[in-house]
Image 1 (cartoon, helix red, strand yellow):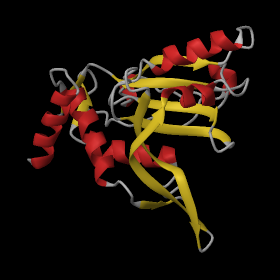
Image 2 (image 1 turned 180 degrees about the vertical axis):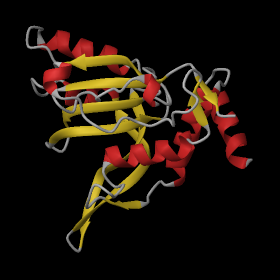
Image 3 (image 1 turned 30 degrees about the horizontal axis):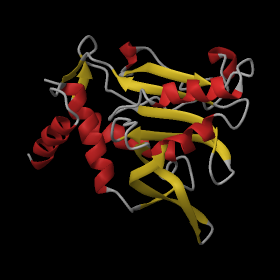
Length: 226
């Protein structure tokens, strides 16, 4: 009951009339907020500490009561595999391998960015900015980039607030973006209140010729299971 009420309030803060997919997004954001600061073991494929595994598990927990209207028997899931480059035509890690909705995949691609060597640096930055301005609460982003630390790799995160050019910040929740080793085992920290300067993230995306990112959004035909 409390979770449902908080979801209503969060949806209201998102400035739209709640639909089932909006409740699902809100429940994911609230679930990750409740885990803020927690350490998640990321030593094997069975653990939740890696950024992608963490999002898969949180989504599975939140999505239990929901289905797609045309496929009521298919449990919803967050696609967990990277698309092969020979299938997607994009670098591995820049996008998901998207199963059909009939299998329970409730996401659609809402936007993408690929660094294009045929564009000028200014044009690539403009394309990255256009991509990032599409982010809204409840979206998930798959990214292949070089980060402020100098490390390069993939990352998956949940957008917690719409992009607001007035603040110059992007807001999301993730796990394993910050991590540590304890007795030889790596743990990721859940960070539900990430806030990064917009232009810094633009720099991540345009720093390498093979970088790319994809924005995934929940489908509109999500319903509460009966």
